[in-house]
Length: 213
Ligand SMILES: [Zn+2]
Image (spheres, protein in one colour):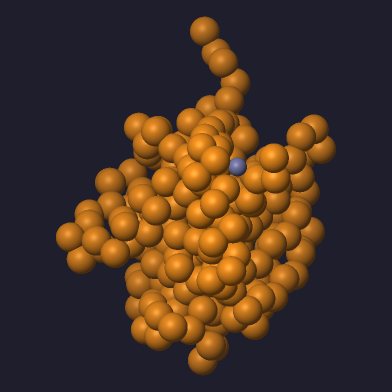
């Protein structure tokens, strides 16, 4: 059976897949594929969290992480007011109660950020064995919901010199693989010189994997 990728289910949840492909994906769900329906349900929850944002209060821990992520970055120091507009809406590491998260396991993390005018979905997946993390993201322009954030430059860094560049496609999606010991920085060079910089220490929660007695 050919499953659809996380990126494709992100599109599906965001209602940006072309009609013909949407039909294929719906047909696939009708076959009862558990893996794909869990993936989709995860992203639909993420999307509804974003939609409910007006009433949504991020967990205290998430706010702490967002602040920590921006503390010490040159961008945060230089443009304090804009730094304040970035919010973590969802972090699968902090929400283990989500049933859909089980299938992702410890090797993956799903995040949702709001950084006006964008919403950024991030999926981090550890590739087996070699310390490489696959980063899949999608940028939506919330002030123009009909416009995805296409053709936007994205830079991934491991904070130790390795940099991988990507550009968002027609669906606002980007994808890149980077070798890292755990730290990851995602930098979005958006419209009007809007720069979004997200720094994640221990991006895949490595410390959470080791089973200490
Ligand atoms: Zn499937």
